[in-house]
Image (tube, rainbow, N blue to C red; front, side, top):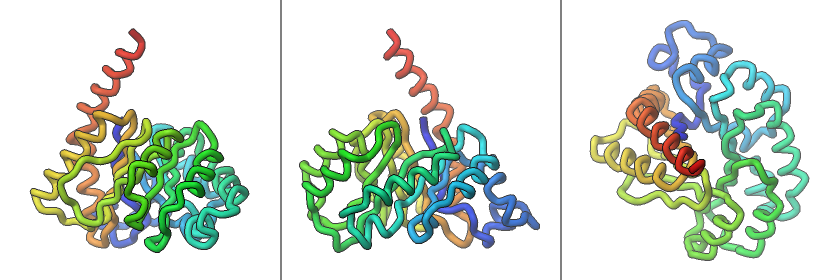
Length: 249
């Protein structure tokens, strides 16, 4: 399954470009979910989620919609993955009202966080089964085969972050894959070509592919996301259906 969306939905600047004129903020999510299949919520990096908010989000979106969340900074940046079991548990519990709408929980580590494979292994071993997680490493010391080995063993995705869209193959370490496009649109035709190729390559290996385009004030991000979704959704769903049929044989 392919899920394409943006890294936010609540920009008032999108009224008139993406959201119809006069759309009130309370109607943003419902409209967004009628056009796109996923959204990445970065709000939870600074504000711990509430189950009441999760329930409200669930009421406004179909079962097929997917929310992905950035893990709270207390886990990734303040405690730096040490002594965070209760915080992670509380974070996930607050998201339970979303039910099937819960997509991927993203652990984005700070750029100064050097590789600590033993610490990473300990965290991965404690993550609950049945939920999807991704890790975004921003210090170059994490770029090694042992990091990928631990992620693959745990069934956790490596976040393929794209500060600048360039050629390359997304790394897939789990049944789900995660691409964060951090370059704001507009994109050149060459950049779009690279992005389309990454999607095509990603779905060859992953059962679910999440792609989130960085939000921009001009409202170009949802347009790019809709174009990608429209271009690939039917084709990719057919591929996934065929893959599922093969497994049944």
